[in-house]
Length: 154
Image (spheres, rainbow, N blue to C red):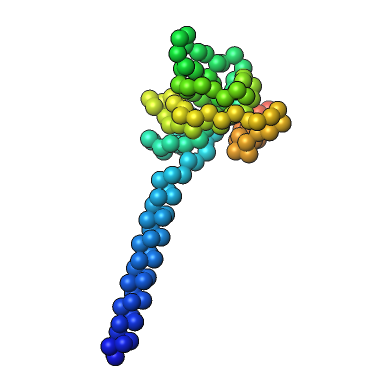
């Protein structure tokens, strides 16, 4: 092998090593910043990774909003019509937050309860986040199948 060819081979090898390292670092950084979406049914079923930050979406249960007098702590229940998860949030809720509407929260599970760091409310009466809509559709389909199975004697 000539010295010039050897030098080119080393240069190409170092270039590939550098590009591979950069791609590995980028993928690691992206993986740590991903917030996956889960429905209340998935949370109750234990499908959420322990200690992970994730998004939880559903409808705020009517009559479930509870506030502590004198501070910003709020407790409310979220449902996908199949299961219910209690959410604790310490902060100012969005102006559009109200019972019976779809919301998406970001947070994690602490001692079996969801502690929200952020609460996002829909922006008008016709919009629902696609993840919440799909979770509600799936929960209703599962409930329909369960009901059909019970009525057919299975």
